[in-house]
Structures are given as structure tokens and as C-alpha cells.
Length: 314
Image (cartoon, rainbow, N blue to C red):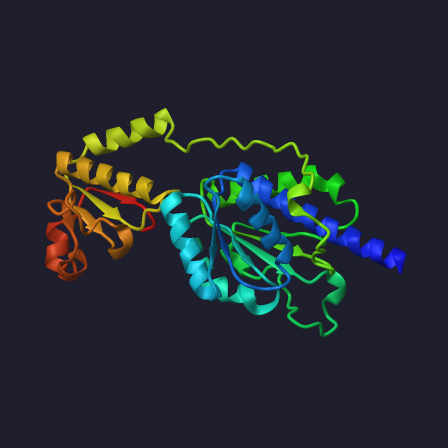
């Protein structure tokens, strides 16, 4: 009995250490909002978050019963802040309810992180309850999908590896092409033990830093563009969806595009989801119904531009 109790305690401690390492790594990368879906298998993650919320100013835990609603709430937080608000759910079909919002984040280039708790490998393929194949859950809609192994007694030795994995996930989710990342996190029972105090879990890890370069035109490419623009007089801008890491960035880009178009006298053909059809800065340069009058062949011939500048996902 004593050996069994010791093994159970070691597993609960390993679960606690894994969860605390993960949460602290995410906090170190600037994450301040988590969206929690109820469940059992994600208990170690919930306990770690509750513990850190008591110690960390500005850490907000949003508890939302319905997974689909939770996912769209996290999508909105990511769009507004430019950083993911990790979704945390139990095993089984719970994560599947996140899929519509994950697809939207993928298509809209919005940072999103999904933390799905899972059964360990030995409970797969044997009819265990709330057990489905969660690796690759969201298919091609993620920038990165990371399948973790369940915590073991040597969890402390893997702390540097875990921190590096979180750094890679953050870089994939908020880099040049922001979008969803999926971390699948198996936990063995006992998921927790009342004798394990999460506030006392010693987390000693050296966090890797991530430095991102800023995408910009080379000087030679910029010069070619200037030459092309200066050599023609009939220019039109075609604008599609523009999604910066933050909503404010995309809004600023739209204002800059409208300013250039107004200065140069260029019309903008704006797609419905470009964000350029409405607003005080664009109403005098945007053709919001171009798809209607350009159906006339004679109009198309009369308005044929010498140069088309495409911006966004057109």
C-alpha cells in the first residue's frame, strides 16, 4: 500500500510540475488571459492557473461553460490584443467544439492557442471513456501542433525542453503569419492530490528568448515599386482582408493605404472584408460597389488601369 501511495503521489507531483512549468512559460511570454472550459482531465492545468492567478497581477481567467462560445471569445481577445488567450479544455470531444473558431483564426491570421488535456497513450484504442485521437485534431488549420507525452517522475529534467517547446509554439502563433497552435497534453491519474500544494511547486527553468525580424521591402524592391508607380498615371488599388498581429495594426495600415490613395488620386476597389469600405478616412477614395459596374465590358475598357496594386488577401 505504501509503494502504491508513493507512486500516486509522484504522479500527482509530476502533473503539477508539468502544469506549472507550462503556465509560467506562457506568462513569461506575455500571456495574461486564459479561457477555461470545464472538465476533469484538465484539472492540473486549472489548478496551476488558479495558483498563478493568486500570485500574478493582471492574470485573468475567463470561465465559459460552452466550448464553442469560449473559443469565439478567445478569438476576440486574440484579435484585439495581438497575443493568444489560451483555451484550456478536457479530453474527448470538448476540443472539437473549438473547431469553428480555430478555422476563423486560421483564415483571419489571429493568434490562438489551444491546450487540450488528453488521456495517456495506454488508454487510447481500448474503449476508454472521453478518449479520441486528439493529435492533429484541427488538421491544416494550425500553424503548429505539438503532441506532448504524459508527465513522468523525471519531469523536472525536461523543464528546459518544455520551455523551448512553448517558445516555438508562441513564435509560430504570433510570428509573420499569426494563427492557431495546438498543444495536446496527456495526464495520468491521479490527476491531483490534496497533499500537493501548487503554490509550493518549485519551477526552475531558464526561459529561451524569441527575437522576431520585421518583414520589410528591400531597398531594391522599394525602388522598383517607385519606378513602376512614377511611370504610369492610371493606378488602382485592390484591397482584400488585412490582418495584423493586432486589430490596431490592421486599422493603422488601412488608414495609411487610404492616405496614399487620396494623395495620389488612386481609387481603391475594396473587398467586403478588407475593412476599407466604411469609416471617416476612406469614403472619398473607395469604390465599394465596383463589382457591380465592372460587369459592363464597356466600363471595364474605359477604366482599364496601367498598374494594379494588390494589398491584403485578394
